[in-house]
Length: 135
Image 1 (cartoon, helix red, strand yellow):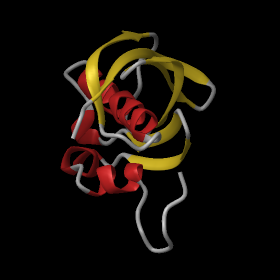
Image 2: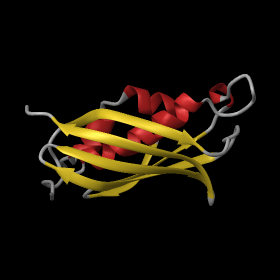
Image 3: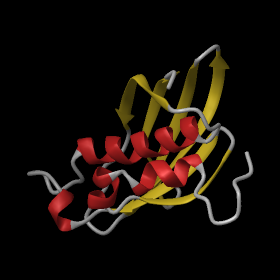
Image 4: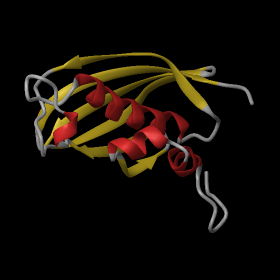
């Protein structure tokens, strides 16, 4: 949905108020109706006791891409549930990319898949279920 010149779209407005994404250094690369791509560089304060990126932070990156894709349609949409499968570890200095895509929208609900990669290596797969709130 086109925005008036100088007005942020729904995704930009949501991210501008997202202190958690800002703290983690998550950036929006691009988005369109039903999809979004975000990225985050793994910092030394993001690794766990095994020297790999904490899974909760990978989840946060995927969840942010999911939120951007869900809200790309315009109405305020939140997570109703989600899960993640970790495939390979991410390490300090890795630049992770999360790409979210809609699988299905039905009524005020949706299903989105998010793939997290480092270069061409698969790091995690995330599935989110969304719900459009009435405001």
